[in-house]
Image (cartoon, rainbow, N blue to C red):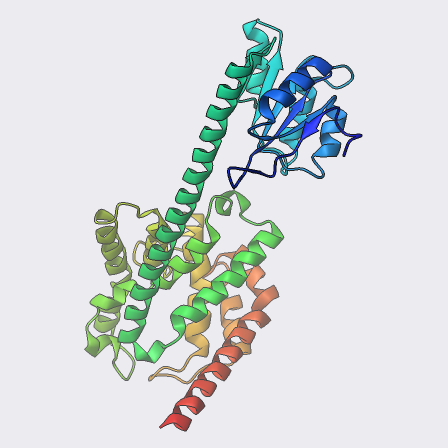
Length: 379
């Protein structure tokens, strides 16, 4: 290490505590010596004579603060801080400029580049110590706040996810006929979304989406079924026209329920996608769907995606009024609905990944059989 700096002290502990590491960068031996003696009793101090040697040192040392001279030959302080900020490893190391300049233009340039302060030369040891102490305290408080905010954010996300999962389970518990539908459609939607991103389709719309929230919110697309009477929802046969019209209302009911949740939830942005899914997953590309009769790209992309996932799962699932269709039959029906029921772009996308839908369905069946076998072994 001696070839990297003119003078240096390392005090591993101060009063039994690990001390902060500070790097002083200056081409003036007097400044390096004064800085080393001034700071060495309280901090681990590393002194280097140039910007080039600073970056050699940074490969071995992770400092808590850098004191950086501006006027140095070959690589001045402005060039050094630009390089520091361009590297994710060093970008967050606080930098204080040391300078003999007194013009505000130079100070403003350094602050714009990311410096947190200026200390004028010649250095005053008491002032240098106090300024460093204050800035290290601020950096410590910033890290504490970031840690707190990170934990708080995780708590909020966990709570939101719990709400979504609990409500989705409640919906599915009322409709035993379609058991597993919510989770399977979420998996289908995930495949469609990843393929969209991979194919760079509809990027302008999806780039602002939170992928995790979108997928979790999709579990509430049938939320409105909570308001549908059991004699319709659980009817062991085909619905009459009147009953079907009542069943259609689950889309509107779903939107109303989510509106009500939003009014009583301080942070409800995570429900944005859920409301769109609930209200638009039965709309059709040609405008003949419900409840709003939207057509084409007037149907939100979330609804157009869910339409494919929802219909596919309904076709391959057992219902009291029909036997399940094969995967091939379901794919043919969806392809025949291209440009009438379904978005043509998404339909073509589906054609290329339909086998992945089948894999999910087969995996789900195996999981179900395994659960039945486990249950039988217990009882």
